[in-house]
Length: 270
Ligand SMILES: [Zn+2]
Image (cartoon, rainbow, N blue to C red; front, side, top):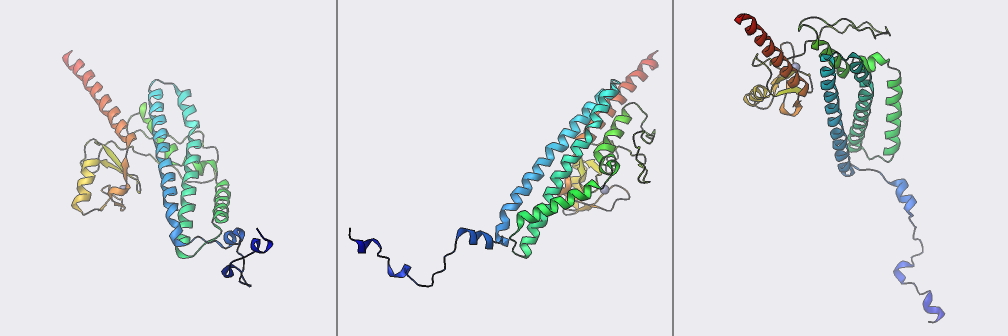
């Protein structure tokens, strides 16, 4: 090897005014473009899927609470009830993350973005600060998990139309909205008989027998106004999900009717 050959540089790389772009420059100038958005939906789907087991676990704990109430184990029911805020909080966090990602996704579709992590952190902090201003009553006690739990449990040892009294644990009187008597549905608004394979609209929270609502949707070419009187929401197959709570409620009601009939027959024979 001679000294001259070691620094022989091919002519095309020896341009005088070459600007060297470092990886750092690349990163600094990197912007997410609309075509980069593709990976976000799968992340949003993951979050959506994380929400499903949460709803299921709540529904199982409610099942347990109903059984415990029937056995008059009120303390255990109470301890399940006390855990509901944790579930609500977790659900809220997942939903907030999902919403922030969806917003970012929409923004990138309109304009390239380079501060996606910062934008995410900023929104997350803002949402949490907003939530901290809410009272427990607003956050938890009016949530459908909480009110649903209390009403389901109440109905175990009370007549169907007996209104539930205002609860004793609403010690913060920060607002005046009174939660009225909630009727937990056991009949389908379409068939007027016991719910069968109940499905619930996630938009208006009304429940119907699956075959009945599917038939209505089919006849109306994919969308129908909610058949619950006074509800103007549209129902499509996309917004329907299984209503396990209603299904078990109907099963309980059928069982109690059957046992009443047995008692009645017994006295009739006497
Ligand atoms: Zn409805």
